[in-house]
Length: 87
Image (cartoon, rainbow, N blue to C red; front, side):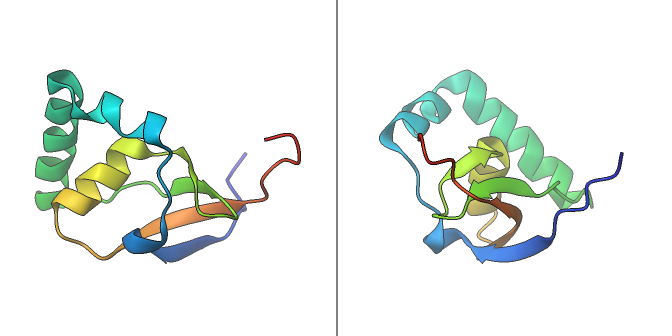
């Protein structure tokens, strides 16, 4: 089934990272994955949208977020979802 959720542009500066979302992406293995995404983007690959809660916290797409940031881009494609009440 195709994704019917609306894709919007979101400024990287509006995205909120929880502290637990930062440290794991500083390790060498994750940095290599981010660099591979950067190189793929430079060769013409477009990133799938990341998923954000409506308060702009990342649900899915941390590597794409960091690659976009490393590329110096200001915006990223995202799908915004309502934040569940229990989170």
